Image (cartoon, rainbow, N blue to C red; front, top):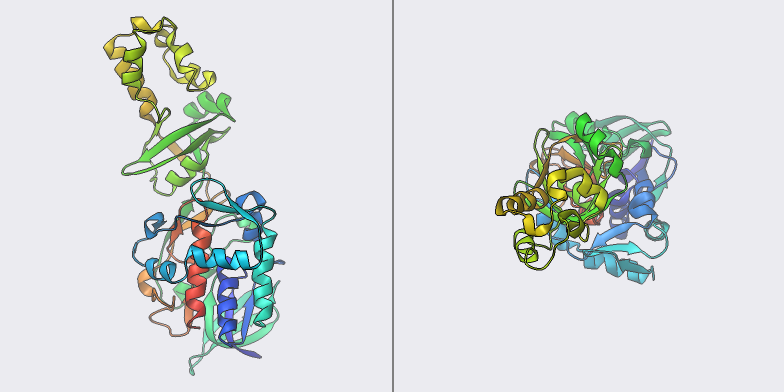
Length: 392
């Protein structure tokens, strides 16, 4: 039996951050992970450059059944705190768009920084270790039986992530632990994920695969201004990934394909100045292939001066509020995050400790807190890991 103060299950972003903070407090800490390498999701994120945080972190950018839960951790360990750590290690980084921060070089810079910090506080990381059984003893400690012997600890932290990208080893293990200790788990679903289309739409738009346009995508009250990308399977791109977290099966999404133009005003004005065909005029703002696909042929061929007020209204409605009903999402296979998870009401927002089981903590993606695309989920990992690290 190996006895220690803290055991953290999961050597991802949240788990490593928690280990660093626990170690700083002199707590003897062991991180156990079933995969062969730590930080796999860190390494593949942001196209291999790790979108490690965002300048514009705000609680409103997170989805949860308890929208207030994330406020405490995010306010106590902020994006500026993590940026300061990155600067201390002289890791070069840049802002891509909308406050998103990426490494100039490789995501490995961030992982190496975390592993170095773990080594400095003597936190031990053990890979290739699967958990077979967890038991809470009468003295309040936890006993873990693993594929490499048994462990005993005072504080147990679940940082095992969600279900997204199963090829990296994602599993429902953390949810099972919660259920074992009578902690509610909200139903999970894929978030930040491309849409698939119904067969008829898929056949129609598959020819547009690779076409990307600047859009405002809306579902109910939520909207995002970024690129939409047509794919062989359906729709992707940052705007689609963002709205997917808010979309419910059976619902439409609305896409404004010309967000910088008031088409009603533009076409009325153009009637006085241009004799070009409508398709020629619109091709200055949208790809020809897309226009051929969605514009009625009789309208497309019309010279602009011949457009009636009804025509102009129809064109403006079509291009500003193009409606499409996705068939489904691509699921966890390509999802960047898992929505739902361990009920926030069952945890302390200050320490991430389970209210009904002293010494048991849940952090990162396993918790019912999911951020927007663009570094928000990494910041939740850093902040929730830091918060638990102050308490374990």
